[in-house]
Image (cartoon, rainbow, N blue to C red; front, side):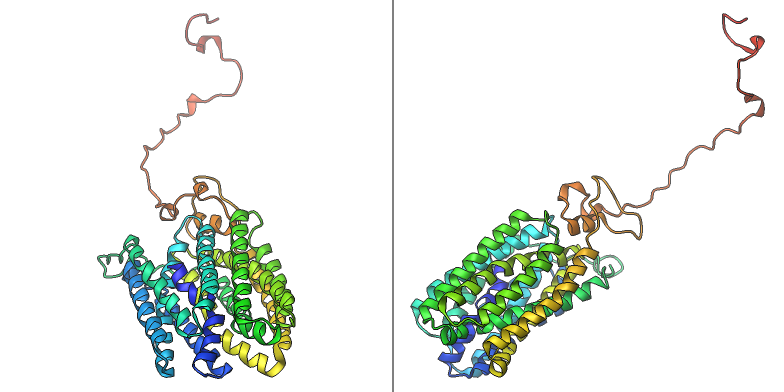
Length: 436
């Protein structure tokens, strides 16, 4: 589900580029179509964040995959602009629904970071294969859209392993719906920062194809190779992130990684040779999924039910949605190099609040068997925020223990003469043999 939901943003450069050339749209119009697709995906996340448990992961996943197959499939088979836009919007909502279900299930895992890195590994590998294959099949706009639709269709049989909806409680409320959303300050700060972070990433990603073709002098096949190698480097980055796990915490990978990404974006946007473009693109794509995996794990640790994971992911999708249009407008107004400097500066600004949230929600590992007192921080969340192995804390459902009152017999009233001053007893008072 993670792969099916995340594939459209990963294929954004070739999707927008082919809309530009195959349907005779302007650069800004093609970017607007890509933004509409991703905006629809983000909308699904905001609408469904609190409804996954009630409706059921299986039903929502199948609905999302069905919409993705129908929407992207229809857009791939037609050349009518309004029909392509409508299909992209419907398919985007389906992708967002699949991503929402995937985010809630990842948050429920014992190791959210490991689950997110596995998902990023899968989607990077598939996107790299598409970039290597599609250029040899023609210039039709429908090829990347068809790849997304076929991926959703292939994932469909796996949805039978997902749980259904929760049963209603006797009071008529769904189980867990009244649980308040935790981390009311850290969550919104992280969501806002991730929105800007994703906006900067996808502003460049949305126009990377045009930078490579028009400014760096690459051909269509050469551009496909560079993007595929960049996504392959992303696989290496995901593997490194998975191997490191919580050893470095979350603050350092998020903060320092974002600073280096800013430099890579500035280099890629200003590249005028194939070598410089390839170097910047590959370095950038190596680090991007590493930082993203830690951000997903951080969002998942804020709420064991996955609500912050979905909301932060939807905020990221909003930034992703605005990326193609923002990149097109900035590059048209300031050129590609100027756009790169603006995006790099924005990343430097958002690195601070993301790092602060990672530090603030860190906590310390708890010992095995530790539980929380009422009003305290759940042990499972503290452990998730610090990377403690899941076996070191009790399961989420067993974190809050009820207080049990145990009746005991009242102690006997002390008899005053039973006590005396310290010292040797009198011989007459000493019981047993050997007295005197």
